[in-house]
Amino acid sequence: KQEVTQIPAALSVPEGENLVLNCSFTDSAIYNLQWFRQDPGKGLTSLLLIQSSQREQTSGRLNASLDKSSGRSTLYIAASQPGDSATYLCAVGVGSSTLGRLYFGRGTQLTVWP
Amino acid sequence: NAGVTQTPKFRILKIGQSMTLQCTQDMNHNYMYWYRQDPGMGLKLIYYSVGAGITDKGEVPNGYNVSRSTTEDFPLRLELAAPSQTSVYFCASSSPLRQGTDTQYFGPGTRLTVL
Image (cartoon, rainbow over all chains, first blue to last red; front, side):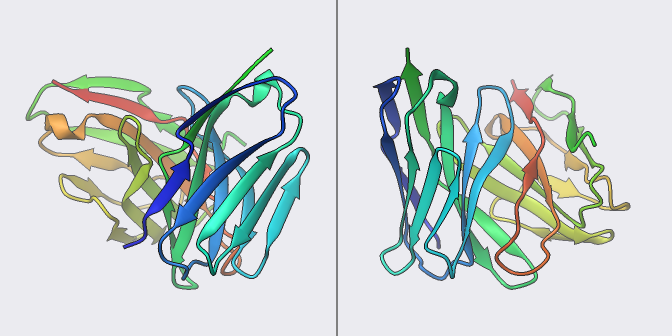
C-alpha cells in the first residue's frame, strides 16, 4: 500500500526566506505527483502537477521536483510571503491509465510571519 | 463557473441518524470523488465515479453509499451515523485527458460531527 510522508509537519519562518517542503512515498509506481494548498476551512487548490516522466514543474515562486527512483519530491518556495501561510499537501497518483487514485500525505503547516 | 459546490457546510448528527452530503460540479467533468479528512491527517478516498451510473469503492467505503445518476451530481449517503464518521468531507472532480495530466478540483468541504 502506498504511504506518503511529509516533513516537516509544521514550519514557521520570517517573510522573505526561501524554504523547502519534503514529500516521500513508498511505491515508485506512480503516474503523477501533485502539490496542493489548503487554507483553513477551505478546500484544496492544486499548485503543481508533475507527470511521472517529468523531473520538475515551476509556477511563479514555486518549484516542485520529483525523483521517482528514490521516492521523493520537494516543493521549493522562493521569497516567502505571509500570504503563503497555509497547509501544503502532497499527493501521489497511483492506478491505471483510465483512473488514478490520489494518496495524500498529512501535510506541512506553513506560517510565514512579517 | 461555480466549480465544485458542496452542501451543507456544517452538520451535527446524533448517533444512528442518516444524512446525504450533496456535491455538484458544473465543469462537465466525468470523474468525481469523495474524500474524508480527519484532524491532522491526509485525505482518504471513500468512493469515486468515472461517469453517470458507474461508482466504485475507495480506501474507506464502510458506512457510506453513493449514486451517480447525472454527470453533475454525486451525493454521499451516511445511513447510520457513528462517532468515527466525524470528519471533514471533500468532493472533487476531474476530467483526465490522458494518463498523467489529471488535476482534481475540490469543493470547500462539509464539516460533520456525530455525537
